[in-house]
Length: 287
Image (cartoon, rainbow, N blue to C red; front, side, top):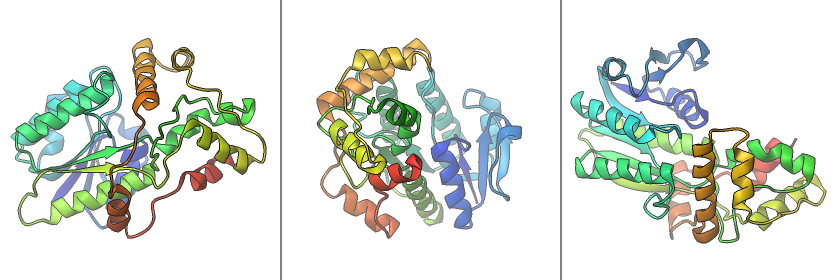
């Protein structure tokens, strides 16, 4: 019995693969370029693409369980629906899908709305799946580290409602635990949703305060300039994606990303250890 991991070379996917291998699972990884894939020994690497139906059919042959992760790209929604339909055709009844927290609330944010549409397909088609809904990734802080250390500001407009940031390593481990739980069940398990959150709820000001403390100098939070954020993002990504990120930031400011009662306890029990903290993550990347 084989577990197929899509997005296997990315930040979350590589953590999922590592955790599955460490638990003795048979893993097949779908990658675009096998030459660039540095994955653990024993992982079967299959070249393919989520819009290439023939490669997907080949990759899903003999697979019992699927981990579906789609990157934020213009055709993300189509990719996910194609992949799930091919999985259904292949008789795969055990799925873990990486969605996003509040996908049903951030309805105007393109990559959130797309993920919610995928959740609806999974539900309406009666597919046995765990829908993982992570909050903001701590790992995003790597992209702003230079601005923090170089300019003394925390530039991400995350507002004052709070984001329950989670470490991608925790996401990978929880995903692996769920994949194996489904894989080992004698019959396909019913649909379940799990919010993936960190132990702390960070605001712009509290994130800046932690950086100040760790670096030993003042880091300021300049406020919620989402328009300026969009302009900055355009230097690194296409205009449509920068606008998508701005719309997300506006929802951070208006709604936050708050855990539901019991989320942290549920994840702590699942992992058998505390969730990684934001402060520890900052200490790790600030060095």
